[in-house]
Image (tube, rainbow, N blue to C red; front, side):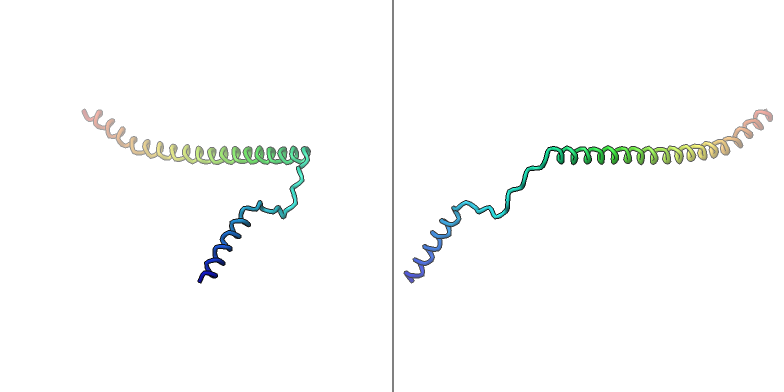
Length: 100
């Protein structure tokens, strides 16, 4: 039993000793990028953002035009219905005035 405890204690000490060692870097260091490459990437990304923004703006304008046209058409229909309903009333009013 004493040998078992001794083995457990030594493994704990060994584990803590090896855990304290600094990690070994197995990967090679990454080479720094050229400034020209970075600038080219930034310019390409900026142009992509600009084209996406322009496309989104044109899409929004197209949707706005469609909804405006639909709204105007609905307003015309409602106006026509109101006129159609109002016309008989004016005729009735005219008949009532003529009868008085």
